[in-house]
Amino acid sequence: MTEPGRKPYEGKGRRLVVSIDVGTTFTAASFCILQEGRVPKFEEILRWPKQANPDAKVPSVLYYDKQGVARAFGAETEDEETIVEAEEGQWHKAEWWKLHLRPSHLSTIRGLKLHPLPKKISAEEVLTDYLRYIKEQVKEYITSTYGDGRAIWTSLSPSTFVILTTPNGWEGAQQNQMRQAAIRAGLVDADGGRRVRFVTEAEAAVLYAIDGGCVGDWLVEDGHLILCDCGGGTIDITGYKIASLAPLKLEESSASRCYLAGAVFITQAARQYLKKQLKGTEWGSDEAIQRAVNDFDRNAKRKFDGPENASWVNLNGFKTIAELGIIRGRLKIPGEDMAKLFEPSIKSIKEGLDIAFENGNRLADKVILVGGLASSPYVYSTLVKWGDEYGISVSRPDGPTTKAVANGALAWYVDNSVGARVSKYEYGTDAGILFDEKCKDSKGRSPYTSPDGIARVANAWNVILPKDTRVESTKEFVRNFDVQSTGSLDAPLQHSIDIYAYRRAKAPKFVTFPGKNKLQPGFDKICKVTAHLTQCRASTPAMTSKTTGTQYRAVNYDVCLSLGATELTARIRWKENDEWAYGPATVAYD
Image (cartoon, rainbow, N blue to C red; front, side, top):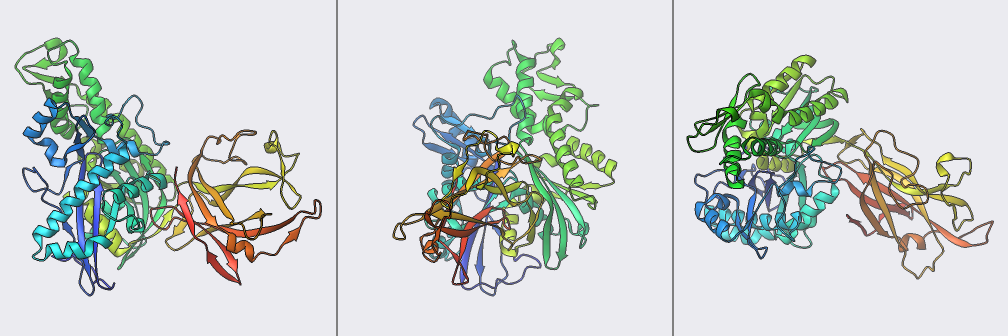
């Protein structure tokens, strides 16, 4: 079945595109074989090892043995034989590991801890193992489903394009980790890093909902909407303007926001609550608590609709302890207590919606909720009340957005539907500026004399891309700099620039503290851009300082930042014979 309303592929030849949505709790994968002149067809992987019933989603869970070897993946971790073997072999169950990849500035809800990673194994290594497993399942699906599947895989897999979904808050460093994991997993070869692309989970979800006609009645040209993805690990919120319906073009109208406050944190809060309530009882062991948490996840959390109604957790057995609220082996959780478990997540959602509405979206008249947590009756009814206060309708598309993010990622790649984004922070670099002894911000900073004989002070903040700036997909933001070189023309000139993000309201004049190499609060180093300017220097005329007589060359170059895709990209350029030259530049992440 081809995708409705989609045009035939205009590229040459054939291309395999694989999209993978690794969520905090569940994972899905889809693929598309693009063929010249044919309408693209999106296909989900619906067969996973040890899966009881065909489903697009499998748990984002792995088992590692004592030697640190991954022994079971996805649905295999729910198989009874595997569970017994894992218990006997004391294997480590890795779950929610994706959240260990998060940027340092994204903190979890206070007091709640993530499940630990296996000893001596990083989150990036877990992702590598999991992506290697997914690659094998995609290969198995293609080779066994198509009559000439083996030939298709052999010819197309070496040039596969891979689309990975990320939360809004994941940045260049996290994307680089994911790209390296995809390379090590064999999804692309060592030289194929550019064939790994990223799209936010929320954007992929809404594109699939639009693609499938689930939200067609909500779309009005030049209209505004706010998308809220309430996922397992993160809450992602973005405002969009509908620039065009045919073809579909969306533009970010407010900077996206991300909170580590998804459904798993409600589960963690419930674990703490249950441990406290059941302490000293026959259900107080770790194993019994885990069974109770599993029942809470499957039943109480999904059914809770408000503080006026109590919820029940099955503890197994028939014992009654009335003073603890245990009736015939079932624990009663008062509605007010249940509401407290949900409160931090709902507070984060409301905060993000308030900011999105205030910052550029007062024209918005609808909020689209997607993600598993959005299906909670209590979360949904609470957000509907929030919408009533602002005169905004809050709606949930039917079904598919909770499991078809991987298909939405394919739609993002094939259709290129998002034409503009909004910068979340100030982005820029540090540079030397003229020393002014009267400047209070320069106090305590040691000036240096550059080759031109002028006193300067280092580490001044230079904004290249301001916060809340609309960035079209093809637009670069440019700031001009120069490096004064006194070296021989024969010696190679390599120049590196650090790119920073400033995450607070008003940036100081300098990136670092006076007399220290420590970043001021709010600054985060995003990456380092390195370029070889030897050729540029050769075409730069020599100059002589009037004060020192030093001969030098002021090698002039531009730093260019782009945010047109979901990745921040940077490069350096310079003029040669009145033509722009782009040197061999590399971007490195810490």
